[in-house]
Image 1: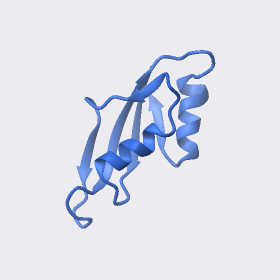
Image 2: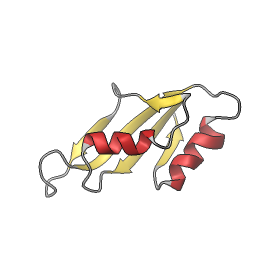
Image 3: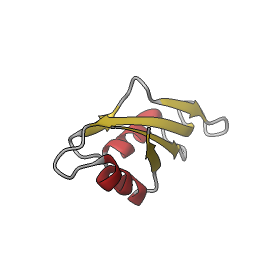
Length: 84
């Protein structure tokens, strides 16, 4: 399964945004760094982001599913995504 997740950078750096998403993922899902991209924030200064589109990849395993666990878990942290 692949999840497309757009999050607001809120003054975060790229690494901080990726770390925030990763903290909500079970072991069978992870951030696809090759497909993830960021839009720089103009007023926040160098390295800070306005928006990050994160691609999360993984396989459903023993109830740890994209729709039944991963997306609701990310939503509990204010991050909204959909299976693509």
